[in-house]
Image (cartoon, rainbow, N blue to C red; front, side, top):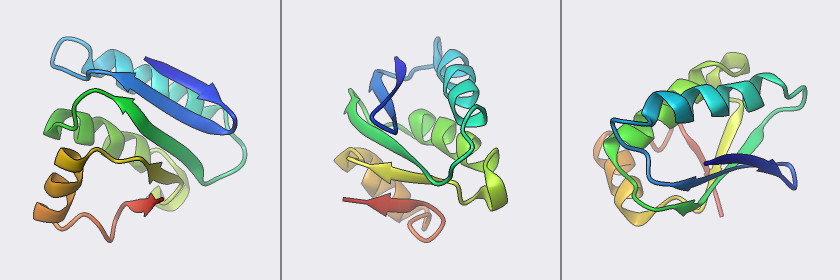
Length: 96
C-alpha cells in the first residue's frame, strides 16, 4: 500500500510479481504530484525487502529530477544487503 503522510511516501505490505506494477503506478502518481524534492520514501511498513521491491524504488527514482529526488528511510536489512551487493548505495540516498 502507498500513502503520502507527514511529507513521506509510506510503503507498506509486500511487493511481489502480482502487484509490483500497481505499487509502481500508485507511487509514481504521488511522486509526480510533488513540487518539492527530495521526497522521503519510508519503507518501515514494507514486509520484505526483495529485488523486485528494489526495482520498483529505482524506477520511481528515475522519474524524479536528475534521478536524485528520493531519499529512502527505514530500508529493510535484506534490501540493504542487495543494495550493497549491487553497489547502489552511492546512487540511492539512504537516510536514518
